[in-house]
Length: 122
Image 1 (cartoon, rainbow, N blue to C red):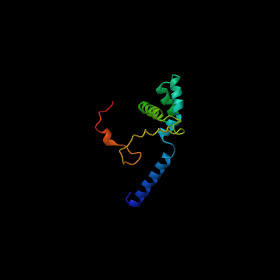
Image 2: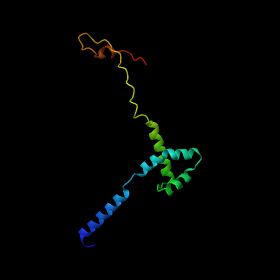
Image 3: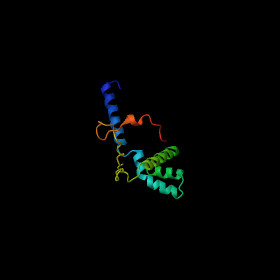
Image 4: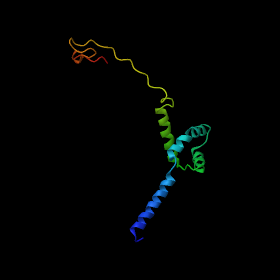
């Protein structure tokens, strides 16, 4: 490959082919889609090694460590964000009660000088 243009075209073609092969859902996305079924199979007594073999047969190849890591991450993700969290807004908190401000202070302001020297009430 003495011609630099030929080399560049060849590498560009290989990169395009690589990008075409990579198109589609990621391994993590495919795992997340199958997660409920994987959890169900594990509850029924399926071993992790059997899961790996079944997933590999369907095109999702993982090592035992990858499976355990993916299970941990997905369980943690689902625990941190319940499925209906997106549909229910967080509850609104009531505003704190207004404390009387110093004379001449704007309404709704807090008088820090009055409270700064008090002993904390833990």
